[in-house]
Length: 276
Length: 349
Image (tube, rainbow over all chains, first blue to last red):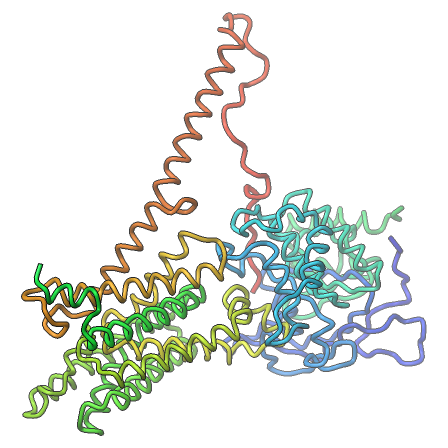
């Protein structure tokens, strides 16, 4: 795991000329989102670098999922602008894969694990072409990567929560994207699946991909991710783990909840100590 | 049995053949689009569309004046879509939830429809209007051109579903994922709704406004018990629709009274729905994987097996002496998968 250089900090404006900076994956400019006239995200202004594993953290109701949905165009922006790889969303779609929260779909739907993974190919297939042999092969490869090849023909309701999450990850992988959005990929999964997901994230990073994930467990944030984006309706802090993941910022984000801060203090200690 | 009855059952009579082929096509279309309506959780919207279409039929009658099949269906379609637009408006612009919105719109439109149709029937020319047939369905009054209308509607629905099968699968399973891949999900939802409305309206003369939604829902629900494969489920649902429609139509003609003509029997709608319900009941009880009886049987045999294992283990360990208890607790049950027992986290706003 490479330790992120302190120099590559997030900034609200991508500074030109500094060629050592990584390219920008997502630019969020002054974005405000409201549900039923009630704002849930205020004035978010951030650039997310490419090639990194980025965690979005914050308390319940902080707007973490909403930020991802806003970037993906799933909720309308009240104001602001979003660019992905310096393109508008419409043109960047082929580069994007999405892993929604597991509870958003009906797992009793009459499809097999392989059917679900194949849905990841629909984007490139367009409206009228059906998945062919090559698509099936790609889907099987991705199921293999998440350790689910032997469950390919299982109906999805017969899978455990962790296995369902792996199927969703395989569906994102088969999109062969450069930018992955994941909404709580670790929620309610078993230890083996958590491990599998972590190594998958590292594989994505190793091949130049970017992952932006909503994450809940403060303890594992520094271990699993390179960058962090701390949200509580406003953007509290964003940047490489070493500089942004501080007790002070966590305090501001979580607003002095004691139990959480104990956790946070330990996590900060771990982040500060050099990792092998 | 009278000769007339056999004439009906063997489809010897040309008008019987016409009517039965009409309802069969309707059952096929309803079963197929119904599968998607149920999976997309739009089945109650189908019910609202059906009930909301009654005032549309009456208004069309006022405007056109005579029993013009196509015009009546057009009126039904317009009001059905108007009803579903009202539901969407109430749901989106007030704090009333969708189920209450459906109840409000369904009741209001249907009440209006009953008032209007009563007024029409009290008019001197109203008795010939045949509007009462639209309540519970009267397949016998269908003529060849009506069947052609139903056939073209069914053909259109089948063609659209066939072409966009993969897209509807994705839309019904994971709408957000479809949206992220750039699909115009709102338009696709609208298309699905339009197909549901079209099928509902086409079924009104044979099945009636009260029970038409049941022909969308029941075959799909019955088919789901037999398969875990969407393609197969859709095909089975269409099949159940055809069987229900044909058997129900024939039953309606033969059960009541001197059965020698389709026009004398029971209303067709209830007969078709009862047939579908019987198929549903059999599926719910007997389907090998998802049915209730096989499931009970599996649970019972698992229990027996576990009891047997436990007994064997006790016997092998022998009766423990009072001062010589086994140091490890005996494992009696099955452990749940670890990830299932993990507490579910609150989802984010």
